[in-house]
Image 1 (spheres, helix red, strand yellow):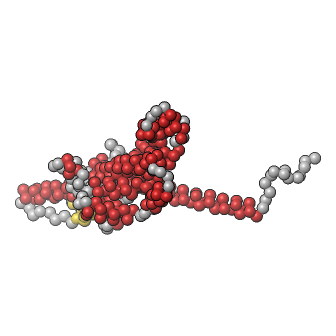
Image 2 (image 1 turned 180 degrees about the vertical axis):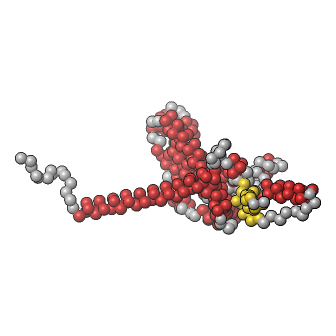
Image 3 (image 1 turned 135 degrees about the vertical axis):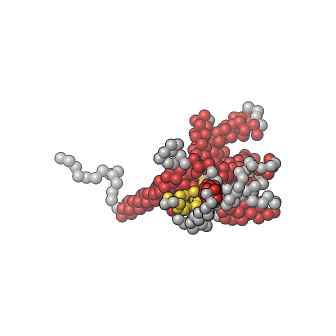
Amino acid sequence: MKSTERHIYSLRPSFHRRVEGAVVWVLRIATLIILVAGLAVFGDIIFKGSRTVFQTSFPFVNVAFLTEAPKTLYVFEHEGASFEMADDDFRAFRTGLEEEAAAAGLPAPQLKTKSYVYSAGGVFPNIVGTILLVMGSMTIALSLGVASAIYLNEYAKQGPVVRFIRLAILNLAGVPSIVFGLFGFGMFVIYFGWNVSLLAGWFTLAFMVLPVVITASEEALKAVPKGFREGSLALGATKWQTIRKAVLPYATPGILTSSILGIARVAGETAPIMFTAAYVVRDKLPWEVERAIDFLFQGVMALPYHIYVVSSKIPQNEYSERVQYGTAFVFLGIVAIIATTSIVLRNRLRSRYRW
């Protein structure tokens, strides 16, 4: 006969267990809601943005959108047909009509047009500016951040001063980006006299992500076993040789994790670059300068700032909406490519340096 007695180690229903189960379900539902909301936002950007970036006919990519600068769109009707032209094409079209009319001895035709700023052309200068800002600022942030982490973890005497420095670094990580933008504007743009330039944007963005890089890099250094250091020193290596040969290679995957976090934040910031590096419109590309040094002291166009301008500073219509979603789609793609490159490099180093 089967026994109905409960096993001594089996779970027994109680009020606390029911409360715990209810809390777990609340957290589970909240997580699903967040995931669904995130997928809805990204799905909307991908769906609408892809219609701007891709097309149904060969070459299946909107080359003009990826290779041209932002332009004004002119919408008009002529001889019963509707036209949508960028400003340079519209001027050429109107000049042709005027020449034909003059040759025939007729008055120039009057075109009733509607213009939409930044709703034609593309985002190539913005792509270039975004990549330059991300790569330059992350190079500075990683150089300073890793050096600071090495000093704090390997050389500094642990005490109240070092603990205060670490606390200050953690506090800086929570400072709003607009504060860093104002700091960069006051320090680099005005005091150093760099004006609105790549150099000012690089250092402002680098200082903004520096706390994240320092903290993550220091944790990566702490994760390397002390035996590696002791073994290297026992074989006669100097302190720096030990760090360079026995510590840094094994901490590099963790340091690259900090670079991924930094890239995600740097690429999406608008306020810091709005004060220090970005222009709404710029005729020349960064490398179109007379002297090489001028490359550092010029502003650029950037995708986050362009999204901000076309979403809030111009009249909204169906034409500007295409640019908004197309720019956001390209922006997400660039961030994903840079972050994926860092992840692949990190995984390769992690598989190479195992302990």
